[in-house]
Image (cartoon, rainbow, N blue to C red):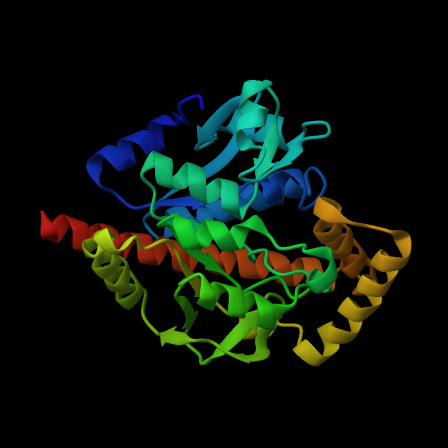
Length: 309
C-alpha cells in the first residue's frame, strides 16, 4: 500500500509525542449532504483542538491515503461525486486505482495504527446486522477491533444493529468494552440499550492507564478497545421511542430489497425522515461528545508516555 500522507500538523504532533485523535471520513462522504458534512467535520475537529489534541481525519483522495486533511482536501472530499465507502477489503483497491473514498471504522483503525495514532473517535461502530443468522451480514469493524490496537470512542453500536449479538462477538474476540460513566451499554441515539456493558470506567485518565497496561502486555497480542460513551442526556432519544422508529425503517428496507453496504446509510436516511430531523441532531451531539472524550483520553495517554520517558 502507498505510504500514508500525514499532514504537517499531525506529523509534528506525532513526532513530539503530543496527543492525536483519528477521525473517520464516511461521516463526510456518506453521513450527510454538502455543506452540512463539511460543517460537521470542522466542528468535530474544533472540539478536539479545544481539548488540547490534534485531529487527524483519515480518507483516500485520488488514490492517496491521508492522515489529516487541510481545508482544500476536506472540501474536495465533501464535494466528491460517488465516493467509495472503504473498509479493510477495499482500502488498498481505492489506493491502487486512484479513487476517492471515506474510511469506515475498520479502515480508519488500520490507517491510524499505521500512522502511530492510538485513539480514534467515531459515532457508532458497525456490528451484527439484524437477520445475520441467515444473511451473515457482520461488519468488519468487529474483527478490526480484535486485531488492531487502537482505542475507539463511540456511542456504542449503531442501534439499527443486533446490539446483543454485537456484544457477544466482541466478547468472543477478546475486545474490552468499557462504558464511560455508567453501567449500561449505550445504543447510539439512546443512553441505555437495555444491556449491561462488560466494563466501566469513569475517568479519561483511567482509560489511558488501561491502554498503557495493554501496551506493556503487547506480547499477549492485544487488539483494540471500545469505549462506549453515552450521548449527552439532553440530546438523547430514549430507546423505547427509537425502537419503534427502527422497526419501521428496517421493515421498509427489507421490502425494498436493500442489502450489503447500502443498508446502514439507507436506514440512517430513513430514520432521519421518520424523526423529522431529530435523529441527525442527536447524531451530531454524540459525535461531538465522542470527539471531546477521545481527545481527553489522548491527552492523558500522551502524559503517561511522556512520564515513562
